[in-house]
Image (cartoon, rainbow, N blue to C red; front, side, top):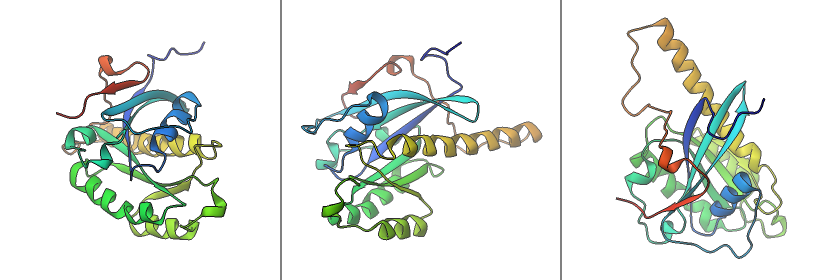
Length: 215
């Protein structure tokens, strides 16, 4: 019997960050609704959507937050990152400057997000092979240097989009599961501050929402 959308074992908050125009909103819509909008425009606020995936016998519900244009105004605050256990750090393979900007976004993540956040570097728009300005090797080298996982995706043709989110969620789950086992074996074990990973706010838990950002 299939589980309803409100039945899950874990709820993980994931954030999408990167320069404006790299395709974050379309990655979100492709993964959660299998939709792509060529006319997608930046909006002010925070947009998020949820989707559940199955991994290693568990139902993992992802609550994915998109900056929705705020990166244009550098208005992203610590409230956006609060409670996030995973991040997709996105650049456009056809725009070198968006790859250069990854360093800035990684620093912001390190400064504002939990120190244990799991980060995946995503080279989006892999369908634009004829316009490629960032090689796959450059992306891999940056990811290895900063201990990030790496993948190239295309929200347009859906290449690796599901895989990117599922891989990130699976990595988070394995970390959480390992800590849970440690906790069972050692009753005195206590996770560090900020390591809470199962987050649920019923008011934010249905469909796609837009919230006024950020207090």
